[in-house]
Image: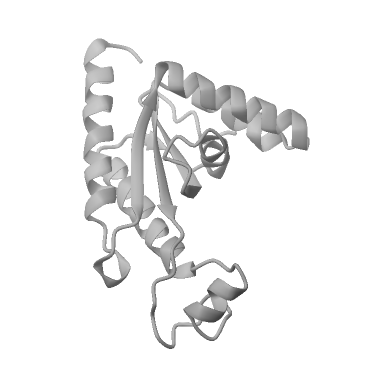
Length: 172
């Protein structure tokens, strides 16, 4: 960050992005989305968990993304609670209905479609303000492991935000 004003602007934008997450359309009008801004100490905990995941799974994307997260002032976490929607005839999950899904310990894909719409709303608002960003499942996996959105939120994505002369997420 070049200045205190850029950091203040980035923090203000992060709050606006959380508004975009909240107001994004949700199936049946049921909001199971949670979001949070992480910075400083909590952000460092996520970086460390990403590094642990990289080492444990020999997955270089976790290390690369940990370095990206460490270099930005803040990120947004966006996750969803997986609960059956009770939609008759949906079958997106591969089961005939929510009862069969529940019996087989399946997941409700409608929730994850809502998550995608909410994340899309956030990053499109970031683009409106020309804030560099990237959607990272790696940040989300680490945040879910740390239960940063609560124990019931198991699918999370992270959106690190950057204000620099060159997009740090571009040439990764």
